[in-house]
Amino acid sequence: VESMTRSLPVSDMGKLISLAKKNTEQNLDLQYKMAVATFQGMEQKGEKPGAALQNWYTSLAEDILKQIPNEQEGWTDEARQQQRYAAEVAGRYKLTALVPALQKLFLQPHADEDTRAITANALMDISANNGPMIAQVLADGDAGISLRQKMAHALGRSENAQSMRLLGEGLKGAPMEVQEAVATVLATKSQGK
Picture (cartoon, rainbow, N blue to C red):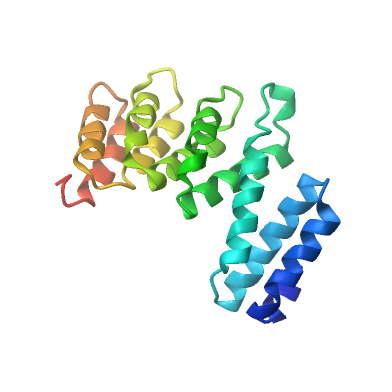
C-alpha cells in the first residue's frame, strides 16, 4: 500500500481509500495498517494527505479511541500502536471533538508512558486549555521521572502564559532531572526566559 500510494496520482487517492475501506470494513487492525502505509507513502512522495485521506484518518482515529482498553491485558503492542496513532492524528488535525476521548486515554492507568506522552502532545496541540491536566502529572511525585520530563515537553508545545506558569510551578519540589527538563523548555520560549 505504501509503494502504491507513492506512485498513485493524488486524483486517484479517493479510489484507493474506497477500496481500502470496503475491504477492511470489519477489521480495524488492517484499516490502521493501511492508513499508516498511505500516510508514509504520501510523506515519501513529499505530499500532504488530501481531504479524503484526512477524513479517513480522522474517522479511523475516532473508531480506535472508542476502543481504549480498560484492563492491563488489553494493552497489547497492537493496541498501544493504534492508540498512539489515533492521538497523533487527533493532534495533527486539531480534532477538538476527540478531546474527551484523548483525556480518557491520557488518564488511563494502564496506558504506557509513551502513549500518555503522545496523547499529552496531542492535547496541547489541540488546545492549551488541556495544560492543567498535564501539569498534574508533571507535579505528581508518584509519577516516574521520565514521564514527568515528557509532560514538561508537552506543556512546552504551547507558548501561552498559562503553560509557562504551569511549567514554572512544575519546578517546585521536583527532582533535579525534572527541573532540568522544565528549565530547558522554558529557556527555549520567549515567555519562559
